[in-house]
Amino acid sequence: MNVREVMSATKVIPVLAFKGVDEAVEVCGALVEGGIPVLEITLRHPTALDALEAVSKALPQAIVGAGTVMTPAQAEQARAAGARFGVSPGLTPTLAEAVQAADWPFLPGVSSVSEAMRATEWGFDALKFFPASASGGASFLSAVGAVLPQVLFCPTGGVKPDNAADYLALPNVPCVGGSWLTKRDADGRIDPAVVTDRARAAGQL
Ligand code: 3PG
Image (cartoon, rainbow, N blue to C red; front, side):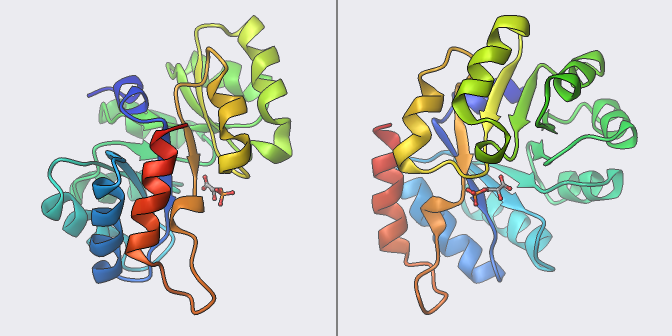
């Protein structure tokens, strides 16, 4: 599966930050039940790699990837844990080289035209636009589509149910990413039933 196929499998890639393995398996199950097949588990917690491995095993029907991949070492660890794709908020020459050498489906982050041009020079034609709201939102991607029509974007960062449709209406945006599906309640918990409802609503976008 290449990264464009990952993007076209869903309208929304949930950006996930779990505090432990059990929470990850339970909440990812709720997302899949709500119809979301692609899961991005960010490497923002010491248990993230264990969570990635456990979720991949528990939900073989899901396409589980790693987010917040910043270094070649993290890319290698995430791949070893079973991540079928990787996402980064940015891109460095060493990271580009490592993921290309491993032939690992990868969505590097950009927030400017020059960064997008450089990413295409390195062979990436599907990019994360991050942080989307702070960097110009849907009107930025609309303008970029005129000069880089071959590049697809997954905007994340400030994407919410009330603005996701603006992005998804663009021809260069097959999917958006965001953390809203698994927002914690006042007690810091993620309610699986609420997650399934939000996932079903996201499927209607
Ligand atoms: C990301 O890593 O893509 C962002 O942290 C997600 O941004 P959001 O929390 O505004 O959805």
